[in-house]
Length: 352
Image 1 (cartoon, one colour):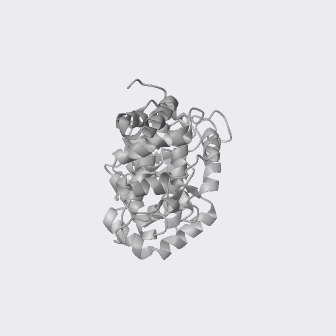
Image 2 (tube, rainbow, N blue to C red):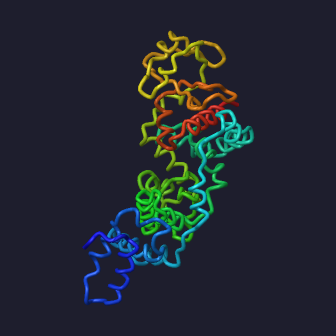
Image 3 (cartoon, one colour):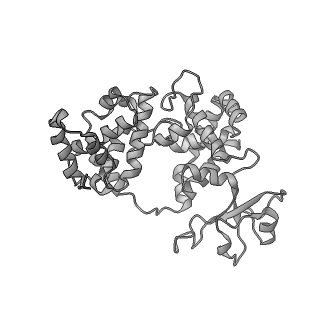
């Protein structure tokens, strides 16, 4: 079949479908599902026509008709989601401002309470996954304020909106298919699958792909509920971190003080030195004391504000010596600010 633009192709498929058994529309449906991404833009074509290809792709992936009907009927794009996606600003806060917002004293206090309230569960999770409870609680707190704020959008509608829009349609279309599989597997119904405007779900804010790869039925009821079942949510977070390579023998890192004239080119992802080597270069704890010189431990220097020019914290801002677990946190969310916030909240939860 010629590679028509998707709006034309989709309308053609609708006309072909009206002819019923006189034509083979399967090839046309497959072409609609695999057509170039430009056809997914919200200003090109009709959303319902676009859904023809989505439903066909879902069927090809083995999604049941019941799920397709429940999830993809009466579906409309959400303009507000496009606004939010378009208006993501360049990050302008300093690290200090960010930490003041994300790790306030109130969250530290609440985190300590949650650590105590869930001690038995967290101890069991640490034994199984090797991730200390304070880190699990830190992720939980930063992602959803300990399950309080997990997003009020329909995940299916949010993903469909972003997949149809076209800016990152290939990614969001895959996530939409993953969401349909989660529904089809019986973990949650389409109307109860809520999350953020970008499709992140539940108390751990997993994208559907992360759910399928890492979510865990910890309470053994044959369904995974990261929305309302705390044990499933926290176990799923711990399982994610374990699979990402969490090392139970290491912490995440620490803030450090760099010597005057420090060569900032040494602060790179590939330059991992032992603590003794960093000590020899004049790197100290932030309070001015010597680094702990544990044998075999390597770390790298992170300057999370090094791209900022000027500002209240200078060109490089604060500095951190981080270990392998920092990169595991980055696997969850590729933001140095986020990773530092998780580490600092975990540290403060522990310190009582």
